Image (cartoon, rainbow, N blue to C red; front, side):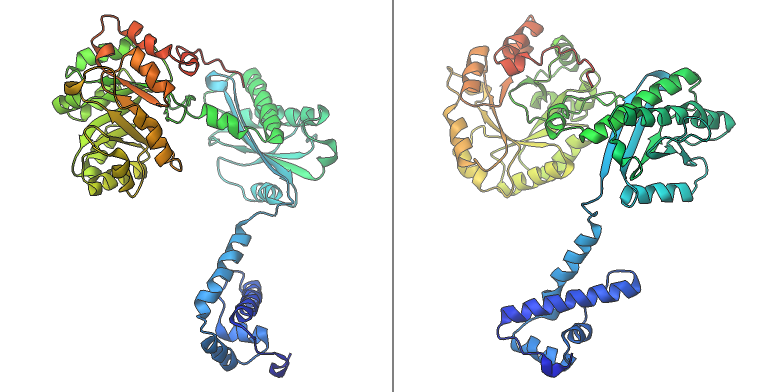
Length: 485
């Protein structure tokens, strides 16, 4: 194509369009030669347009277009396309943990097309061996592999022939038999057995000794992982429901989050560590309970008291009532290092302090709460903040408790004013079961209780009074978590 065949664009929009098209062609052509994504150049793009580079320079000047800015989006889109797997390939993922003791089986697997990412992983695994983690084909017996062909990758380093015998014996046979049975039972479609492959990562403990159990557990784990892969398990609803209830067996405790209100927050304000521990031990188990390391307790023992409370509250959400008024970032960091799940600042603090406080808490992944005690206009104060806190506390101080009114009308006012925000509203100050019920009915997410529980002669009974207030709170009291996978 000669330059005389190219017409000058009639508008800036037309010029930007043809410039982007030519730049994309140039990038693709240069990338094909170099094997990596290249940046477009004026000369190369002009060549794709079929014009001299001086002509392109003159058009750029006339239409007031910066070449680099106009083409950077083209490069970004090509990078994004390069990273996206081809949507036509089957690429499914499954996982399962079955059994107990040293023979416990944990299987992770990929199943998909031979000419897709799974097939590429299969071929690479078989061709690139690694000492102690040598991949092997699954076989039901020597000379009889199942279909789809399956590659087993040992997770644990194989150090000697004893380890090898467990992998090349019961584990290998178990995986192969599970694959074959899955096809026969219709879990894997029969018309896909020659198109798909499986990559199966298998855990065999070095101290495992019972070959029958190794086979038994790995067969079950492989079959279950295949079922889950084909069903695209788990659904998001299950993830969202279980993520704050689950306890990882190796971790040993739960890490709760707070987006399933309502909650009962017990304010541990008594400046006596041993007495506070006794109160916690008398508290019934419930997913709805938050423990607050109260200000008097922290003032006496420092934030290290949070770590002390963890001795008897290993997997309970603990929020530190720092009542921060200054150096917001520093105080968040101190409480975070002591394993606080959340921190509380005073709403009376300067906006700059609260901004730093909230930013740091969210950066570290813990909850930022702002206590509106003595704040004349909470809505106005919150509107001055750069970021929104996770929890807003409507609070009446102990020294001003007279009667039942605790500003409950503010609950709906806050929800209306900030309906585009995701946050929880806590109500504190002389809360009893009666005022707690009223607060929950008016939309409170958290009721903060202090003396009614901590000064009670029967802590368990007092706590249960609050946990019986709503059906949601009742269902999480002393739950037996039965494994039903």
